[in-house]
Length: 89
Image 1 (cartoon, one colour):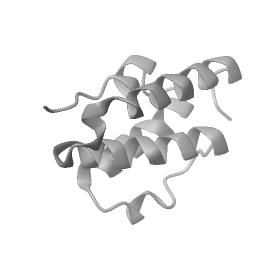
Image 2 (spheres, one colour; image 1 turned 30 degrees about the horizontal axis):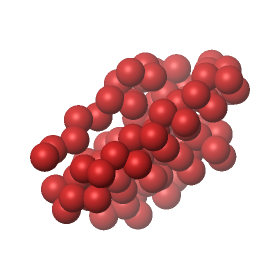
Image 3 (tube, helix red, strand yellow; image 1 turned 90 degrees about the vertical axis):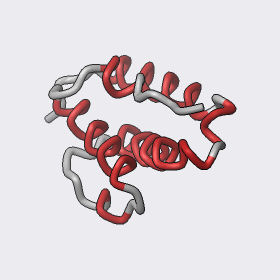
């Protein structure tokens, strides 16, 4: 079903959790990134291969980041692209 190893998924979850601890994540300007990454953690933990539930996110950027999480599990998005969404401020 997914082409990414469990080890790689765990590394990616750790990298995203580290990004979520960045102080800039709590700035209102980065709310969408935080929303997306929070959903990506759930997607990776659940090994979700569909986009169901992403539409409940409130920001367009948050939804786009969550889609990247599903695409990552499918092998259609790299670790670098998923983990390095730029922060503002």
